[in-house]
Length: 354
Image 1: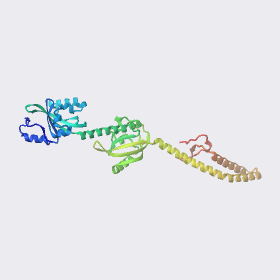
Image 2: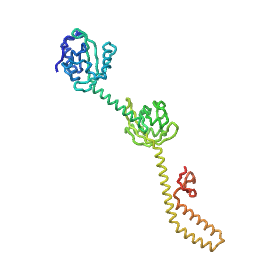
Image 3: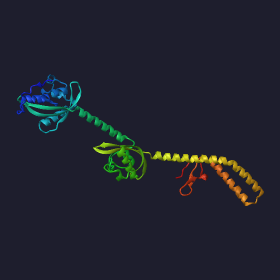
Image 4: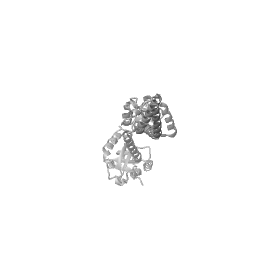
């Protein structure tokens, strides 16, 4: 593509010959343009490549027509501020190319003398890829924040080494009873979250070696002092340039308690079933023993030993009868904290005394 327009009369660079200036602009990887009286007087090949317009087409356009309608006023104000020396940093511009594509431009302008008259020299750097990456990162960050705070599980981000909280979600605050300002900047050790600090140290050692932990059963202490059983998973991540971890915790206290009670009921039910089977097998020998005892009592009606023997056999028979028909039960203390089934308190409902 040949250089469009005439820059042989650029007078603001008297120390450079016009051939050198022409080559600099022609082969520059940055778009260059000159505007006078709101019309393009010169554009280099890179400017044409970025916009998709040839110099001949641009001569018929006002510079503002390239700018996206939503950005025109903002760009105009920034350009005027730069021309008047109130702004030094380049500004981001959004233009619409000839094909209708949106391009993000990093732009700078300055006043010059062109062909003996006041003009504007502009530099035009295509920054579309970088801006699109920023937009994607921003969208990803927004999605992450929504998922982070919407999760019903506890989600926290802490530093890896000292466990200082950097981010906590709503579920964490609601469950623990802490306010955000009480947590952020504090460590889990300071708050006493971990019931067993040694457990924390062991898990963090695993994280340093493996980078992740899934579904470790841990115990956490909330602000009220209540201890919860939790399922804890964590991954090591880079966050603000630091080695951190993102951890997800799920409260399994109720589920664990229910499972323990179910196991206890199943265990006791198994014992009752075995007792029932044993009683059933004992019935025949007990009947034979009772027959023999009755014979002894009839022969020795005044013998206290025979009477006592008959009473104890009846007692055993009553116990086996009760065991055979127990469907609900409660427990009572026996010795040294051991619990046994309270046969005499068997009732129409099931109760496990604690």
